[in-house]
Image 1 (tube, one colour):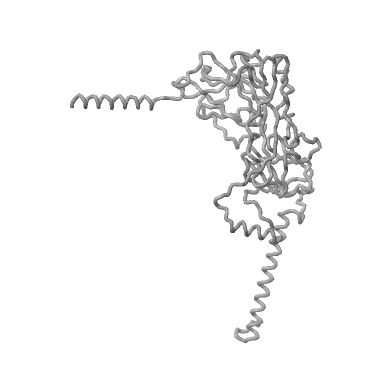
Image 2: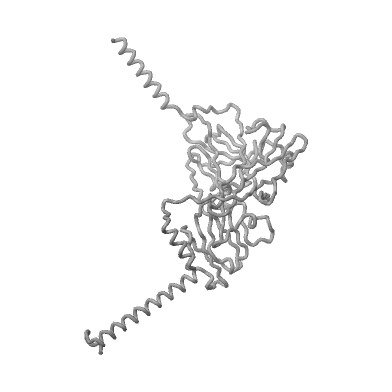
Length: 414
């Protein structure tokens, strides 16, 4: 009996020790740092945001420092932290053209890059303040300038692969975005970045496929990069249509009333999304951004009840376009005209998220027009106020006349 009890206690003790060992496990203990520093190749489109994890570090290192070099072995190395890992930047605070250090952030040993630009391409090192490197990336930010759009509905096809001896230049496409609108005809697209396959690559760069890296990788010689210079990123677009998901707050009775009122010719139903007001000078340019949208998101624009499809409004289709959508999903209006007044709605990932009410002023003053929703609203409120005052005035005098005729009220004569 004692032997059985002793065996049970020993088994329980070993179980507790095993449990204690599991609790002390660290993710960095499972990923030992390589003895020879390698570079992971990663490619993104300009204005995208991404994360570079520090996959390995010694357990005693409590804070990492990220370094940046334009080329391997270059004398100039830029430090992207404050040496304590406390550099925090919110994506909402980053604007186009912000300084390089403003667009980086350190969180849980990972480097976050907001709205990356082509000049941010280079080598990124995860290390310590003393300059010890643990992990590294070869980042290629490809410019959207000259990006070629291909429309499947028009029978167009992407570029074919280019072959120059044992050199192959091709496009690698990302996954399709969801439909940019719901309930109506919409569009979806996929981004394609330039890649290159060659046996003459540096062995220090880690590839996802044998002898394949992005066209701006530091694993390529200058000669190979020049050969792929004319191969720009691509955008493949096709039509789609998906039903809208019913929200819990929607009620069939309320929607039926809205439809009935619309059929009677009353004010049409307005989407229940936040609407921001903006007044623009006549003849000046304007750029509208969709809140929370990124270049890889499915973003669509509508003006009032008219859909602005990419097949007609994408940048580069027509050089003389005054209103167009760029590859970063921004809506551009050149030389604002009075006809640009209205509400511009923004779709993100298939859901209507925001509206922008645009008013156009001439010569520094607001040019009022009944075609403007703001002007119509002011006129309606003013007329309703006058009508209410008139009804109250008439009601008071009718009551006084009734009291005088019936002699049931005291005289009101002075």
